[in-house]
Amino acid sequence: MVSYDIPVIAGDGIGPEVIREGKKVLDAVSEAMGFELNWIDMPYGADHYLATGELLSEDSLRALSAYRAIYMGAVGDPRCPPGLLERGILLAIRFYFDEYINLRPVKLYEGVPTPLKDKGPKDVNFEVVRENTEDAYVGLGARVPRGRSRIEHELRRELYKVKFGLDIDSDHDEIAYQLMVISRAGAERVIRYAFERCKRLGRSKVTSVDKANVLTEAYGLWRDAFERVRADYPDIEAEYAYVDAITMWFVKNPEWFQVVVAPNMFGDIITDLGAMIQGGLGVAAGANINPSGTSMFEPIHGSAPKYKGLGRANPIATILAGGMMLEFLGEARAAEAVEEAVRAVLKEGRVRTPDLGGSSSTSQVGDAIASKAKEVAASL
Image (cartoon, rainbow, N blue to C red; front, side, top):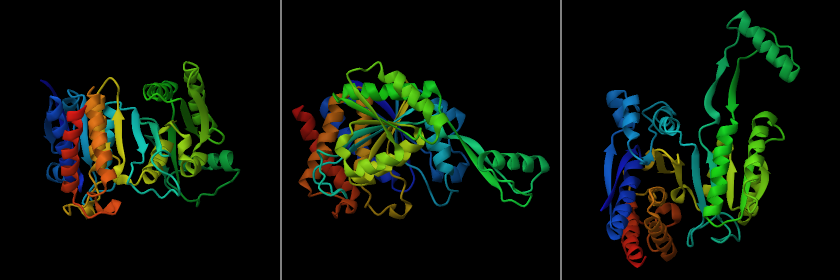
């Protein structure tokens, strides 16, 4: 029997609750389809950090490199400084394993409400491929305090002269800067993935997002990379959209989009909009992918500490992320069974958590989808 060893970082808040249901559904599918999932529970999160001072050590990251996929719940806890767990665990994994693709299906399922008037499942069904390791998220920046030294004052003064035509005095407020980094290699590899994904899905159009009309250097390079890659795919339509415009079109005409590829920061923003038009964070799954390395699969929502232990969290995003993990591992039929089970339970509408207008618990939703997944798997 084929088996897969999967490290699990359940994390904080509602993370352990939704991961439990995800594992339940994936176990049901794997049993029905004749393969095995061996879960390796990892302690990383707020409790572990507060007890040991460890986030993710170099040794821990090296140990995780032995596995192809990591199943992630959510990290974040009010007992820890804001961003500490996210940077020290989530981003550490993304950067260490060069998970340069963030894949976000934006799909509205039947029976799930959307805030978009007169739109349904046939209208909201596209994917966003977000570059995941570059742009403004590389951490290159600083704050320069007021009056710290004469040299810094002069540098600040020259910056204001060049950029704004202002001559500041020594009492001027501090400044901050954050650099964005777009490399041609980094842009081309994620754009190529988007075109290949479009081919694999049997779709015909890729939309590139940028702001090259204002941020001409960084996103001009992104656009150049898109032009170079699109030449290799003459049968796929290619188009551009500025990020401000695409937020409008996601709302007005989501049916226009098939595969969208975006640099890191813009991708981060538009995928949250995507989550809302598909029915909310509770049904929004994501994958952080290195096609030839270790990848991580997670819901896009946070740890929601105020809902911890209440049994109200929607596990569907985590379950769908688990299906994406099965696809990545080569178990395409099993991934299909997971999604079809989710689709069927949502369409029936009898079992759903409060965020979708129901009163079912987290575990009741997991039970319903696991049961349906067995039925679906048996029919494939």
